[in-house]
Length: 96
Image (cartoon, rainbow, N blue to C red; front, side, top):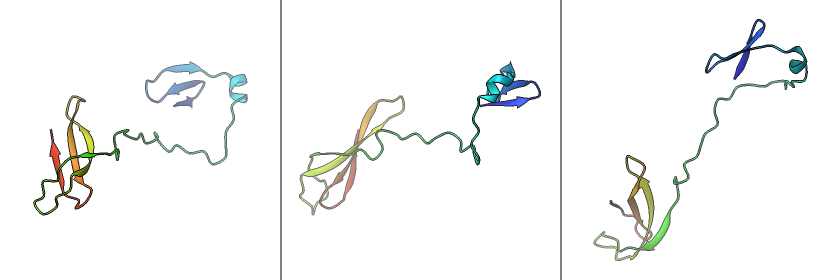
């Protein structure tokens, strides 16, 4: 984000400087009450993404053969870990 320092515009990130131009500045619109809210949050596309499949529940007293699962990244960016949740009893287990 550029800000003014005397007769120049200065970038807060890289310290790049440019001379101010009064005609260009006159065309800029400033909204009352503007504020810096920081960078927007970025959502992970895999977060809360679940699939269902036939997978027997390992809980001894359940007997269900349906589970939902999530793919989780391992270090290095490969998606190799699946976290299962039984749709009947809620038991959780993982497969890597």
